[in-house]
Length: 557
Image 1: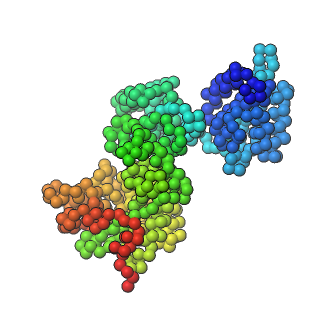
Image 2: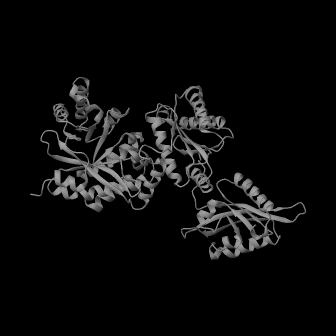
Image 3: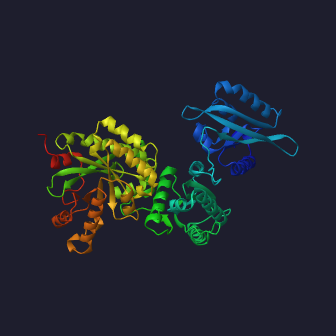
């Protein structure tokens, strides 16, 4: 055993460490055997400060060598006083170098634990990294998403299996609109109380963002989580009452088993968020369990998403853009194109977009990827403008991008860098983007339209808010979803619906593009319905840049 320690003595050190770790969650914990100068430290501290390991001999000196020289003397004096028995405690702040070479302020508190004979046996305590943002949500008192990821990092480092559940309230903005934000905060407090009662002592509850909450549990099975979830739905949807009012809330939820430890916790969280969105948008609030199983292509989905995230972090390596033409409905001349993302890796080959895009769009990493898509698409298509001055480049934007305060400046920055005319760029708002608070979305659209950028509403008619958002915001283009085009050859209501949607768009001052047109008959019918442009396999599947240029872009005059 290290330093001559007996197994029983080391076991007691571990037990003591575990006890401190439980009560000091969110801090780095250390326990040092004073006789052997042998210590155990939190794996989070080992990773953040690049320490030699979880178990160390001479840890006070190892730690002290990382402290800023100006602060080392005071630190050394305090530690010497503890180890000599002069004092029984340690409480100080100092600046210490992390693994990135930056100095952060830490608050370190420790105490000496004595034996029955009064002899000092252990020195134990906790270190708070003041350079990190607060891990406590001010409204609910729960740990926030940062605290959650601290905990997930610890579980992953220890390869400790657990189950995680996300619970949220659908369309909570209507509560604030009807009763005001103070009442909305009261509802959030009441929801948290219900969740605490239902999951009492069975896991740790976190506030992720907005009205989404996360339960991390090592005691409840997935079957038990499903049972608790139904209890949550009954209590919150049917029984919750505040000051005599019943807010009529709708609960959505997802769950995932943490059993794979060779991936980034953020990749896991993105998969959890993807399942949550399925519950909210398609599952009528039913609990959606993300199954990390091998699919028909023999791909482990969680591992795949983790690899996608690494590709993004590595300067978007392996990503490429395909382009699908958008044609004038009457002349069949090129009107523009839509940029569509693809990904190829040595391990998986060319991966179909529906395998990774719906999940990765929920990931903060998509902000980086989204900027790459915009920049690359403008660089690729800028040469087309010489022969097609009215060419319109359509680029999809994700909810994860729009909710960032920096989105407008990002678009402006890349337009300037490429010297791309704003009037030739059209940003497509997808279904999930409509979940953004309407005033925020209105500001984004207004600021960029003033610059000349155009906006399209994608998949029109498929979402509950399509008509509402078209009425409230100014869109240049309405894109009719493929589901309305598929059966137009049969006549009847599908044709009438396209005519009605076209008329609605005209009333709102928008042009209309019919998506998913695959046959000559469909093409002619939607043209007769009055649409302006057509997109679909009838003209071309999405193709690489060179193929698009050679097939559709006329040579300069």
